[in-house]
Image 1: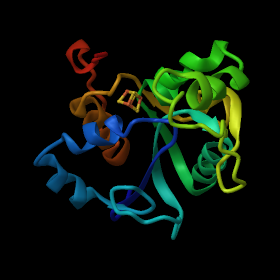
Image 2: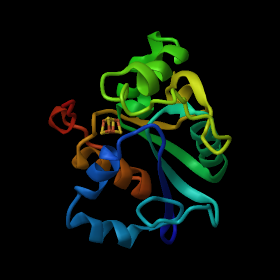
Image 3: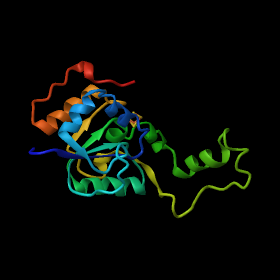
Length: 184
Ligand code: SF4
């Protein structure tokens, strides 16, 4: 790759733990900014793509239509798409709802759950058109678009993200000892 590579990141149905793990590379962030410029990302707060990107990092799977649109947009704008963490790879914790009908999930969340029963006397399930439509289940990213690389973990260790990212950016051989994999 000649010049600085351009990276974009996003969090779909995730908890931002994978982004926090990326920032856990600590002082290597100084090395990273020698290698890359960030485009669309919560790290830069850039909301829209301004150019084609070399690498897109995706945290989280798809639980609503907005997630699907964002993921397709990343596929369109990024040469290599990398899913980071179990939510993006397999659906993760949000996918625990996959065996429960959406109607039951919404009723539990807004009408009958022990923490909401007294807070919603009008028994309203939010349905504003601005709210992204929830999907029938949570989809891992590879079921929505083609994915080039998968980084497992919850979250993946900073060392693992660093190894994969620098290997991608520099073409160096990747070293992945067992110790860099983590599932808390
Ligand atoms: Fe959070 Fe773990 Fe999902 Fe990453 S994989 S978004 S850390 S729950």
